[in-house]
Length: 71
Image (cartoon, rainbow, N blue to C red; front, side, top):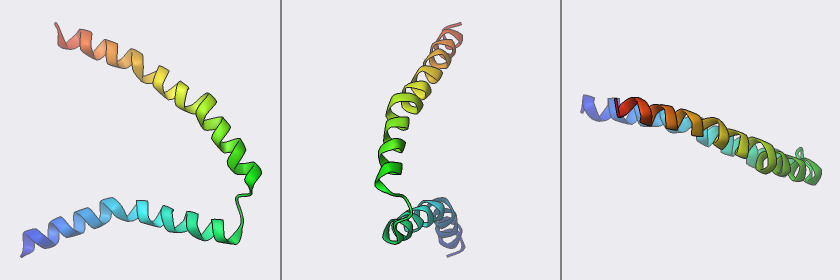
């Protein structure tokens, strides 16, 4: 029983932040805090700058790790 409680506590602590952010997003959307302009601008920022930047930032590290593993 102690193992189950430890596993349950770990899984709750791992997933709780996701549910808190989800609930906060639903609450803020109902209040109307992020307007349509914010959502459009945020989407444009993510898809044109952040996502390509993170992909290009990870690619060199993958190549370096593969070359180090082959040694």
